[in-house]
Image (tube, rainbow, N blue to C red; front, side):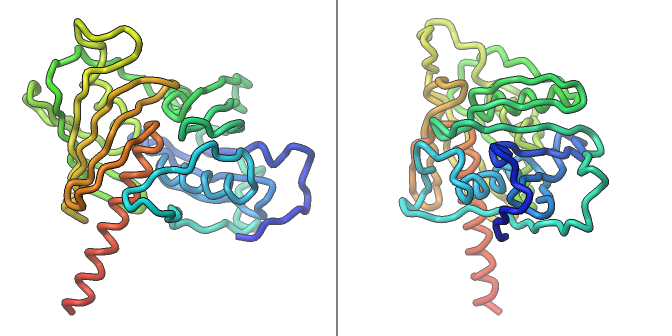
Length: 286
């Protein structure tokens, strides 16, 4: 998608217009607009929005990444969402979202996550965020969803997340825990974050009050593209996000992650690679 200088305003390149068209089942759908594009960039799901914006930020060199995102293979690989650019003639009047409109300003990309502010154009309310996790909470509340409180600290180190569906960049499945009889379904990144947090919060008695969590872990198995199983240990809560380790069991590879966003990108990379390998195996067998 080519860059264009036509119509650029001073500092306009710093801002992203999010036209939110839907939030059914907390799957964020909409279009992204930036003055470097003639048209809008459609997305389905938070992960796809992240991938589009990361590619855009790298292209316009703002904001500059403070660190390179990690990956399982230890070498550079571009993560891109499979989306196109809308033609100018396809834009809705005034680029208005069907549900809400926001102006997003990501000022920094420190600690493998985002810092900045977001303005709800309908209410004029502007809020700052220190991480993707905080931005997710702002978006959820603005779009009419409640933020579920954390759990009771179940005291077990292991919970299991099974990803059963993967379409585009959208993952869905269930979360289980040895101390819970039922399996808790998730169909979006908001659910996934909250279900994991429910296994961790509040901090168990006897843990240190400086943000360190007793190590716990969960598994992710991708049924349709797998198996692709991850063991994740969340060790710290700093910079308004999570830090820990993620192991890709089938490839016997382990990587440290510095934020929930980096964890999502690692999972997206692994699931995408698993799908590519499975398709190659099918082609060879045919």
